Image (cartoon, rainbow, N blue to C red; front, side):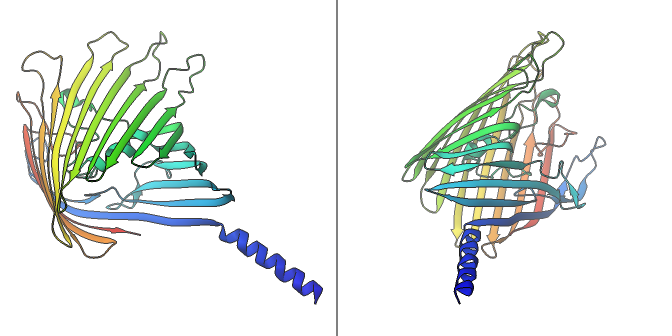
Length: 349
């Protein structure tokens, strides 16, 4: 009997210890059918099936273990999926591959992750960084320039503290260049505050390129500001980015300002309408030499359940000075303007 009781005690202790550790499988699947005019160099129209309209498709593992006294060990692995082909959108865990600790002091992780800028500015984009019809991360510009934010960082240490009415964050990406600790390094600081219907955010990042032959490197410095105000059924959004890139080659700096204004409006319990305008002002170029592109995007979303949404969206992009642009933040433009329309479905698990 004593042996049986001892064995039962050990089993119960093991079960209790096991219960303190958990791993969750999660993901998001988003597919849509899209029409674009001016879809190639011959200005032909295009129909296609896309992976990701409101959000990029992905899968991941998220785990934690209770270490006692309010301390947890945490981990996350996440990769992107191109739903139209079934292929990975890069490395198998190219989005998240990290481990760390979480407690009263906040949360610190090491590895690969989204940048602090990405984390903090996301709630201030009404489109939520939609792959289609959001330019908050980056907008098409003169000469294919992408004067955007740093969205993902490898070789990082990332910290976040969530307080009462505020949160703070920081990212440091190791450059890992022998003899040049600043080459290829990334630095980000961020803070946000919220009080009732109002919220605001500020982020600053410095992104150094890999050193060139003489040991110097390109250096991008990016400032973001954002605010939201919740009116109940409607929520107002405003965001701003100042981008400056100093070139190691001695060529002219790359400078631009990005502004977006938008609104989310809950017209019914399951229906949400979103409208937003993005504008990018390219600086320090010869008169008439820049695109200064703008994008107007509209979306209607219907929540079929807590996990499944269907949506329709449209976008119109236009550039100045006979320059090329398109609605996508990633794809090349083939005309001075482009009109696009999308119907899609998204499911979270």
